[in-house]
Figure 1 (cartoon, rainbow, N blue to C red):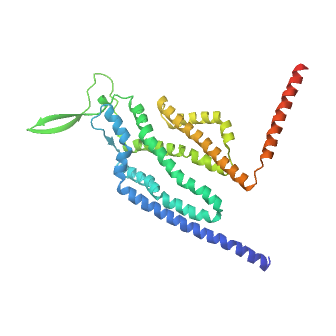
Figure 2 (figure 1 turned 45 degrees about the horizontal axis):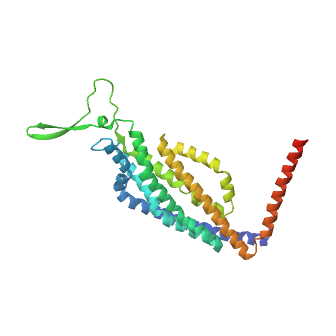
Figure 3 (figure 1 turned 90 degrees about the vertical axis):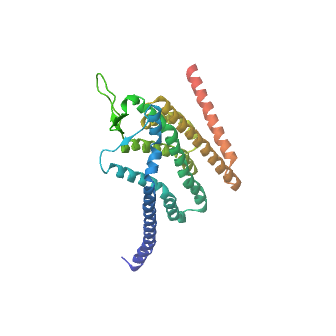
Length: 319
């Protein structure tokens, strides 16, 4: 290998090393932000847990339980539950910093037009996720809890507080209602399992609400178009129905709500992609790159091809 080839290899390797060093710096800052977010979230993990379990509490009270109670069955379970909450909400707190580090790493390699196209989606993505999470927490989770717990007569499930006076003082004991026959089926909700249901709904609907952001970004990149999305609408309906059956309980009302919401987002996506195409067409026409005559010629050719096909079909029938 000549000295010139060696110099070329060293010059090409230098930018790669610089990019790797910058990537390492961005990752370190993101990890530090994530750790700080976990610490901050852990200090308020218990109020967050109470907030996430509010739909279950409201459902239990509506079903007749005067004092909703959750339990944990191992010494470390409650601590790990708080830590899981801290990780999820710590990432949410650190996402602006993580997104900024990602943007600063990628932005130097983009043109100005690409930056202007990509930056709004970086902002819209967490906003849409927040909307989806809010919809899951305030609408879907209460309906799901009402469906699941509605199979149980909660008034006979939960222990009843009975006061008995002993030596002039009152003590509270917990007694399970007596039954003449059979076995009482008692619900004692576990904290981590109840939290799992809530977090799954939040993440699932948060991701579903990313649909307009994703399809609009793909439309800007030219990967999809409004006409193509409209032509596969019937397949999208089937896919959304399958999604509703998988991520929601077997409750027709909840599944219908999810279908209406996600299908509405799909139609919004088609509208946004069509708007992107219209703006691109106007820009190309203003710059002189868009030829209306060519488009009309293509449409005329397609019309003539259809007429020829119809004539051939007519001749074959007459023959």
